[in-house]
Length: 340
Picture 1: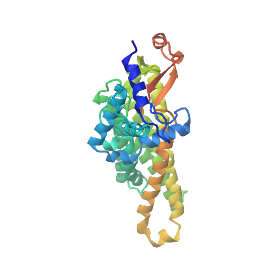
Picture 2 (picture 1 turned 45 degrees about the vertical axis):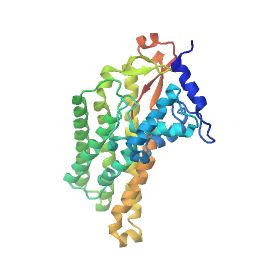
Picture 3 (picture 1 turned 60 degrees about the horizontal axis):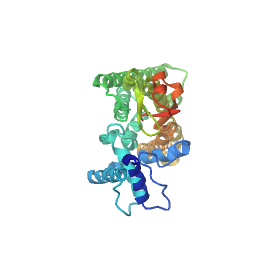
């Protein structure tokens, strides 16, 4: 007798109506190929789509139920592939892939740009005081810590103490580096006031990049100690791997270094040029709105580019993992949730 769990999605797939522009639906699989950067870029554009922030509770339930019907082979006639992909997009944007629990709106990847842009604007404000530098670095790392924790690999339980350690480590490192660099710039007498102001605008990048690494490592250190789950090609649990956890954290840390580059480097360069224009010199009140738009555009470009560097469900050869993992499966490769 055929396995019901295997045949149900097949039957549901045949029930789904063909759509001219949508590929055949695959439950739990990305709509776009993850082997190429462009495919991952298009996939993560869906993940960070801010329109999903406005999805109602009823629409979320409908999306989850539609996917359950597909899984169980009870899909109603007339459902299109586009509707199934849309339902999966909603579920992936709102629910954590490991726990299936709702992620708090400001900490979803789809909320990262809308809720993070005001913080970026604050980080890049000119003529920062000591107090304002500390405040914006603290606020930025607080937001990052919550986003990292909310989108972590949750196949293993993580105590609250680990979150607090990661949070404090990130805040202390960010504030220390930012304040230290600002003090050094202020004491550099060979710089003209204009040059000093320009250099100060780039101070947030090394502070944020260093703190982001600290944030990710400390926040998810438990994964290095306990390992993370690895799955075979059929989605079956093979075991728990510390080596896969190291790969996951390295990939996430690299993403967190690349992410602030366009956000904290491009706006100061662009604003230094725009401030010389007749319009902004005549209307200085427009400086903050213009800077906000520049930061929003840089953020919108940087986030999908950075998180597209690696697929969320990363693949690794079993020969690179622990011997017990290689012995536990006949698959040549396994996959793990890298986290975001």
